[in-house]
Image (cartoon, rainbow, N blue to C red; front, side):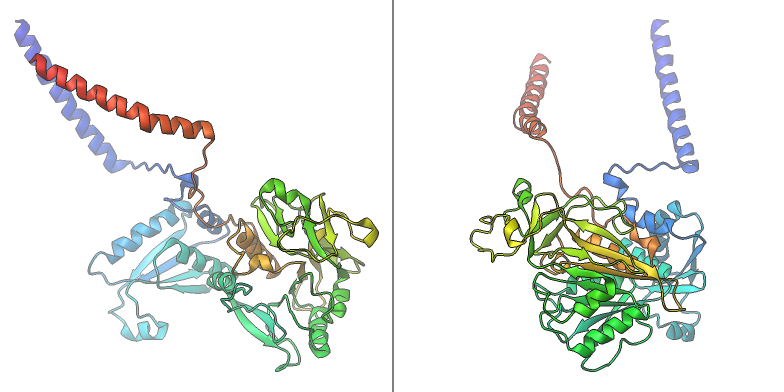
Length: 451
């Protein structure tokens, strides 16, 4: 009788196990659950992409011109599910490109699977299926149209398309992917800033600008144009005094140095490292560390009708150094009040705004920064330099919805652990794990000998 009950118990357990497996299988077809344990859940959708989707205040339609044969449509639909999970009114519609070849030629579609994004009468085309390219296309869709950014050239400025260390080519390439178009502006060829220019950039000229060029820039500002001026410690004698007067600011002489850099591992005091910022729309919520090589301090002389707010400020151990610095011993400098050197904290980044003199605009904006190296090809990858530069351009172009987007990049590329945690990992892998394997092997061998 006991054997019969044990046999029945075994059959009952097997039956319950089968029923449980069937129930789990049935429930898995009705309900879905996903878990993403990476930092900020970046395998599901990056924080930046989620923030871009949150800026839309209406439905977005994506039309995919994908051939129904093959798995391309399933691939596109699966990829967009991550976006639809964040924005429920993002819809996807498929069109067979073979049904209307003339329409495909009209749209310029030659890639199977090309996407057209629609939002409030605007559209953006996308030929590459990746999160970075789709999020960039969504940003361009928010802007509505490409923004024309004119870079002054002809006087030794940093080139927007250059690949030299001091140029801005890497940064501008990334901006163009987000809906900005860089064009040259040479006042030897034109007498005024062309119409429909959204922003003019004067990026660290090394030669004196002709008076006609300076007057054209001043007229552009007086007529309501937005301008970004990247100055340098050596830019105080390039004939730009009328432009500075138009803003009511002054580039102070000397190079800004900071004696606190040694504690941060910065050997050259001319490298200004910032981790906190004065409150302003550009720096709201911005916590990344930025690095500024050889900056010049700025001073506000008269406010006039401009609202001037500093957003970059050096520390209390900084000052304006007047003496030449020996590159072999950059730390051998001292603050000299008798020479007229100014003690910090000192501002070296101003954000200016006012009611626009142009009837076509509501607000005019300008930014003056005492350093242009931080956006150069050499220093762009340091800390939050690129993210801060993108915020500056977004604010100047009036794209306030995009200013506070979280910085790009994987947040878990680096493993940050304390020394104690490193010691524990080392002991675990080098001592504990081998001992456990030896113990398991010995236990298996002992059991086999007993049989």
